[in-house]
Image (cartoon, rainbow, N blue to C red; front, side, top):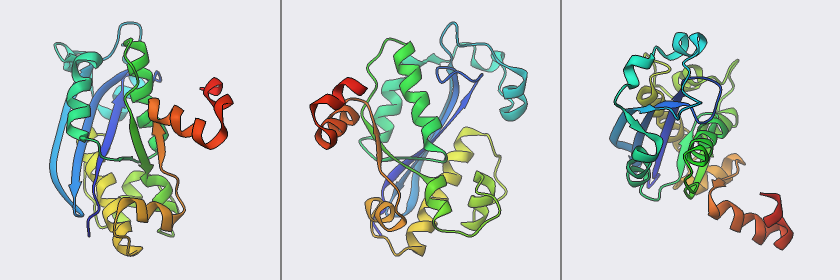
Amino acid sequence: MPVNFTAIDFETANSSSASACSVGLAKVRDGIVVDRVAWFIQPAPGHDAFLSWNIKIHGIRPSDVVGAATWAEQLPDLVAFAGGDHLVAHNAGFDLGVISGASTVAGLAVPDFTYVCSLQVARRTYQLDSYRLPVAAMAAGFEGFNHHDALADAEACAAIMIHAAKRHDADTLEDLARIAGVKIGAIGPIATRERASTHGPMALNQQ
């Protein structure tokens, strides 16, 4: 089953999309997690206040990111690890919004990424009272992980997609998205080009 993708999860210092303080990534090849990585990120000035609510959720404090790479410094490693894969995240709009927001604040071009939301896939795969990551992951047979640890959440997200692909008898991530009726989204220049090709030249003015 050649289901290939990179699952990603961010934790943030506050409500700003530019306040990423941690990232976890899990690379999936043929339906198996084959590599994983995580690191702290130093949020951009002006977006670096750690709110007590966020600290309560993920346990990351300002002292943890002292000396950590900035967004601009770590982005090449993130892009290299993904290696052109589709990204997968639970509530992907949030995580891809972090990539867009943090890149923009850092004065960088938003990188090209296509993505699928595991939350949407879970809603079309399981009958659950809640589709929060721990609940959906449990339905996929992945439980007992440290929720809001970025790497653990990325691996949980990967487990949902791998299990869903088996449930739907999907051979690829694209097949899974099609069968589940979930859109493959995009950010970066590729998103502008796709919108232009779908809606015509005027769409470029809507970005």
